[in-house]
Every structure is written in C-alpha cells, then in structure tokens.
Image (tube, rainbow, N blue to C red; front, side, top):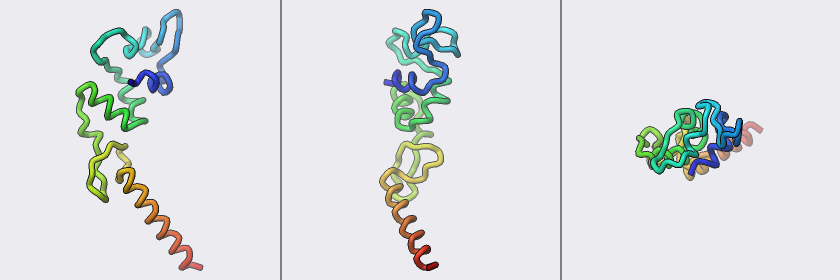
Length: 115
C-alpha cells in the first residue's frame, strides 16, 4: 500500500546500500516496510514526516493498523460533513470550490465598484 509512497517521499530510504536492499539510514538496516512479516509494521519517522503530506493516505494507513483516526477527521464549516484533511483546511473539497467561486465574485465586484 505505502511502499511506493515510502520510496518517493522518505528521506531515509535508499534502494540499495552496502548490499542491503531497501536500506534505511535511520535504522541502519533494511526498512521495516519491506520485511516479510504478515502483521502491519510501524515506522515513527514515516508516520510523523511522510504521511502528513497525503491526508487520505494517512487516514487509510491508520485505519489499516487500527490506530485512532479521530484526529484526522475534520468538519466542514459550510456543510458540516466530516472529511480527511490537514489542520489548516476548513472546507471539504466541494465546499472549497464553492467558497473560492464566492470569494472570486466578491473580489471582482469590489474591483468593478472601485473603477
């Protein structure tokens, strides 16, 4: 699920180093995500630094590992629906588009009124 994301975004992951496949410089051994274990494994660096870049992936990751997902859910200020997003986001995707359109209309009106 997250192997490709890990390879692209993780600063500690190297493809191969010193004959170690999927080398992690933080652990100084093979990355925990590429082990043959059946149970889901966790990497604190990945959870703190890489996952926040993609809120949807972070939600799936936490749900898959039965971790709390409550703090990842946001409530839209306009429609009051729950959505996954960053701390700074106030609106869901649909309401964000509507809000941007409204803001654009207001700014154009102000501009026309000033002329």
